Amino acid sequence: MTTDTILILITLIICTVVLSLIILLNRRKDENIADELDAEFELLRKKTDENAALSRRELTQQFSILGEMHSKTSAAAAQETRKSIESLRSEMEQNRRDSELRQRLLQDRMEKQNLENAANLRQEVVSQFTGLNELSLKTMSEISQRNDRSMGELKGTIEQNLLQMRETVEKRLSESISTGLEGSFKSVSSQLEQVYLGLGQMQSLTSDILDLKKVLGNVKNRGSWGEMQLGNLLSDMLAPGQFEREKMLGKGKSRVDFAIRLPGEDGSNVFLPVDSKFPLDKYNAVLLASETGENYKEAITELKNAAQESAKSIGSKYILPPETTDFAVMFVPSEGLFSLLAAEGMLVLLRQKYHVLLAGPSTFSALLSAIQTGFRSLAIRKNSEEIFRLLGEFKKTFGNFEKELEQAIRSLNAAQNNLEKLNRSSGKLSSELTRIEELGEHTETKEE
Image (tube, rainbow, N blue to C red; front, side, top):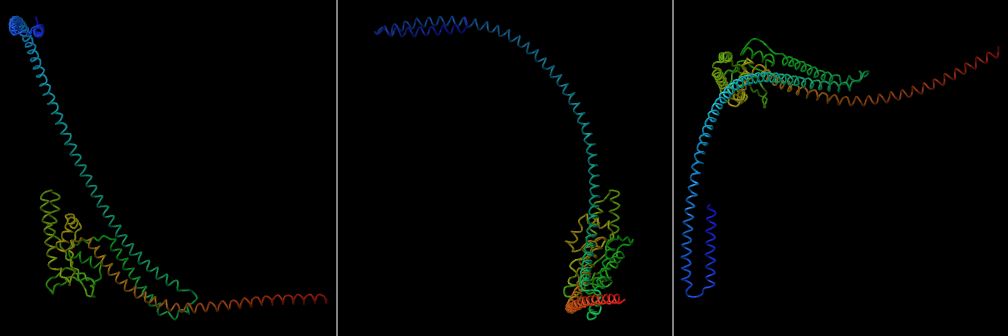
């Protein structure tokens, strides 16, 4: 018997007992119900014990059978498990060997890829440096071209302004002059001479500015350094009275290489100190380090320190307002040195810290050009005021001349009208004389 069958029997027995109890409770209502119930319960207990013992025996047999089946099943399962474990161990060993092989292949591939990446990186770095170098050269070329265009535009503007001024003056003069009226201009001849004198001065100024254009357009290679080159630039671009050599400043305490004389607000002179500095040994050290690649930073630092020391000395010795301007110029006679210092940020540093303007040959020439243009503009303004004053007087005199000319024109018109009347009268007389002659000829013909 199975366990399910035993459980079904126990359930049926319990149901039978309960049903019997209900029947007995319905049939017996007397005092013997308890005894009968006890007897019934005793009988039921015995039957239950017998059924339970029978069930235990059957369960024991079933469990024995199940134990034997479990033992057999466990042995087969254990053997199958051992086989699975051995197969799994073999598969894991094969996977380990495959994994090591794949790892070695992957490592070789990664090393090869790293070598290729390093080569590509080196090539890319070289390409970027080449492109950066080309970009730098192109940028420097564009800057140079823009500077040339700016200088050309400045010169063109100056020439155009002078040309416009000259055309204006010539136009005003040409409008007021007419051929065939030489006698009428005798009253204003002296004033015209003064005007022509002023025009001659303006032509002289035009010639001077054209000379300035030639100076700005040519690159000077004089082969000299320091004070000689600075003196040459000043002599070429300024008049002798516009600068002084070896100027004493501060009541004879300091002597500067050159001082440019500038007009002050109250009519006095203010001097712009210009001193030449050229740390040749420091510059040569930087050039040598840039070629060899050794100690380049140290050489640059020493050159910058030397430039700062020079600027500090110039600022403390030569900047003495109000005798001088509130800044000075430190001239370096080498474009290469100036470009190197400018690239290292020394232009801004020296200007802000020491009030010293760093200038190379080209930048100093531009500075002198600006100063000279200021001088020219001042002279032009003074001469222009005189010319316009003379033109005002000329305009007043020419107004009187226009009135006299109008009267002469009216007289000429009246004379022309009289001539036309005389011409018409002469025509009538001529036609009458012709008729008289024709009549005379006709009379003579009849008489014959």
